[in-house]
Length: 449
Image: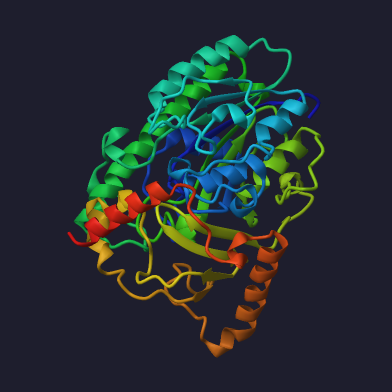
């Protein structure tokens, strides 16, 4: 590629792999997303792409820095007091060093001060609880701002990097679009198939359809401003869907995410390729740097998957590591996933199988399941992904899997030591004790309802 492409990264909330082209037996959907499906059919779609953490800020922090949340310090939500420390270098900063102008439109959820993230320009902020995190920056606002941006930058001498963030498809879903027909949705195997979940999934589908409509408009804007052929367009999300046993857990519905990349004027981002190689969103940053011929920093954790795109390698990693420390409560866990197995270590004695985020506890689906989850959680979990793709059967105590368990346990421990995980020294304190105590009070109230 003789000329460095413009790069647009469009990131949603809580979408997992809920896009029409990602319909699979493990995570089925019946979505009609023609614009995203078209991008995937023309470009590259990644099927085994995982986040580092099943919560918004920690996952996004890894995209920004190519470091794990416990390394870059973003182990909880920005709206709970956490933030990327200033000493962390971000993707925008690296790209700026390599001749790019860098811009943010819409939502970011990595820093209490978006100016610290290294962008040359930042769209208007909408304040939420005194933090400049851009909540309620929805698709409509993004569309209007993008059109102006493309018109202003279509004649730029240097390439641009544009990060577009939207609040969709975070709960409440009805904020974003009209619900689909509940009878038309596919209920994934990790959820009960009843009226409650069909109704919420229908609302979720409606929000996703709204995003797909915006993607179509942005692609047309790129065509109208003659930017499309020289622009790498990337669509991704931060973590899994906002339903029980997905978001906030280390099971595949919580950590498996979508990634679609397309550039018309490119040999490697074309042709409707499907990449099944195991990858992490920690690999996002070094891949973009490798793509433009930049030096990949030695201090980051990710691996470039450009060799996979070029057909030079079948894989660049054999395992991915995942973690959770805080969402609205302290729920520390660490995990490793290889092609056919997953091992999870839970560090706290908790009297529920899965800790649902507060917004999920407040809606009918959460209320329906909260009492059913009131069982002690195992200290360790091991799943045979090939035989048990829905991770229902914890085989940690099965003697036939002793060697696999010991191997993954050792790998996880070595990773925690190498990356200086603070969990090894004991309990990690919340960044805002007041916010933490308020969340505990809300949970106690919901538990007693």
